[in-house]
Length: 239
Length: 239
Image (cartoon, rainbow over all chains, first blue to last red):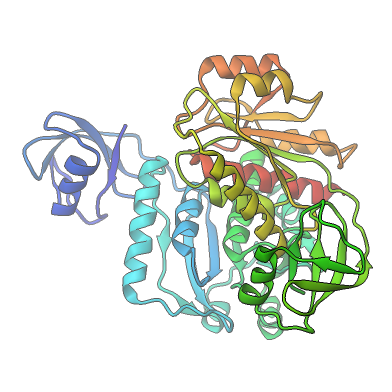
């Protein structure tokens, strides 16, 4: 069934007051007519069956089963010059829960604040299309050094590096998740020019493990999706 | 070092006669000047160090180590409505060796012959950029029924299907490749609307195994890359 993500703070009683943008999306993009039923979700696990009434209003028919939050899967991505829109969309399909855009030494893009709104919209729409009840959180871009100081967790932090004799991400994640498949995983992908040697040193000192995505050379956007595909598959296999 | 793929039948003696397109690419796109050194590859494992001389000519300096062919990895992809250019490029990065575009029941795109030339050019350029010495072969699109009659091999054929209780592609490929990591693998991805029930029945009868890429819904283009990322990672892990 077609679905729309409302704002988490938008009140849901026996009716739902749609924003102009939501009403437009339901009527013009999804082509629903008064009387048609759809799913409204807050992007954080709650969802309702709703019926479109007059312009701008929806009647709540029933709350749906609330899903428990998915295991944490964090993509820390140095912003590529182009293609980040696709990364956000495909990462959402692959079950990412948090995206942290990073400004690293060799990052060429300094995004405008409008970009963040755009990425959040893409994540919402991709979640609706692939029926993910939890919309990934996309944080504002931060500097590499700040993330390494504040963002790293105790275990399960992987820094993807090209072509060194690092262990493969696949066996590393299989070992990590073997005992607790739901444990949080964080994976960091460099920009086109790669991480600087200093960045790699800092990341390792902060608890990141260097891992390899294989002997081939991957573009930054392909690397992000490859890493997420591997982690999601291992989690599915072990859950 | 920058590289260019020549035609497999283009004669290489002590000089290499460049085509106009190749000369243009070296001089205008890669911005090489007379005297600059580059790598010429035939896309089938042979490569040479060469030096750009006057317009349209290259001096062969030395043959480089010929690499043995990579293990066969075949992507059989029902053509999506949009996005196949990106699939070709990213599949090349991920080490695909053969791409078979498929016209299935629900395929909406009937590509012009020009498309095939375009995909082959994208595969050549992606191979050069990610330094893959073997350029993937892209076959002309065929009908689903023809491929199922002629294209299936003895083992290692996986049909990706959404959301059934099929085994995951990851454990299936790990079992297949455990004893012989170099064995050929073929993976088939449906179009936007999925395979029809009849197509699934035919594929299974011809030796395909149904596998799942996880509980989420993936767009056709994301599914292709996810499958290839999984297979390549398992092969790297076991090789």
